[in-house]
Image (cartoon, rainbow, N blue to C red; front, side):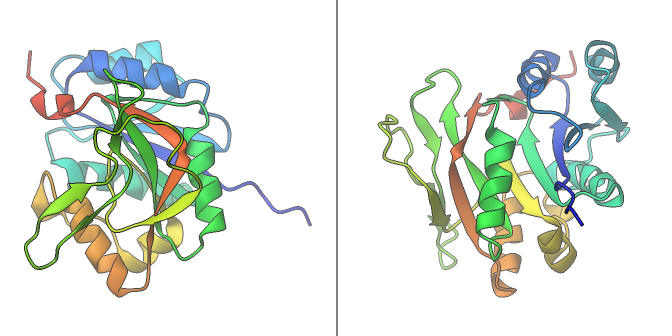
Length: 232
């Protein structure tokens, strides 16, 4: 019997800033297919984002959360939908990014090569400096709580290759496996914004899951723009 292709869901959390979301969804058009679905979980945008998506991108699904639930809870709504639909992999993606056409494919491939790694990160660049690295892994001190990004501000000269173990994930473009979600659980919703992926990673580490950087999965991030959303 021929095995089925894995099903991936990309969860895009939005809260206003339609222009960023539009650019991100435009970049996802060649990524989405019958095995890779896109769901926008909207946290109560007041700028017409849900309506704009339904009009401009009818092939993508929209879930309206009704209010700003915060980053973990808003994404968790989307994750619940993905799991209920049979997703094997879920990718959390910031709406202030644009993606390479193979970004999801490369994340899934890295997950399949690394079955003990429940969290797989993309290599992330600055949007306004496309050849400069923003995130290539990193680590965190459980003693001081201080965290750092590896590769920060480095020009990409091909020094990041293959699948590399990393000490901490970044939820800007992060794949998690179904087994990870069913074992570790979803993000802790009381955190609201920032630190949620670190908490997730620490919980996962205790259960034997690793984090891996998939250097062939590339994303460009408009750093910090998603936290500046207004109600205009």
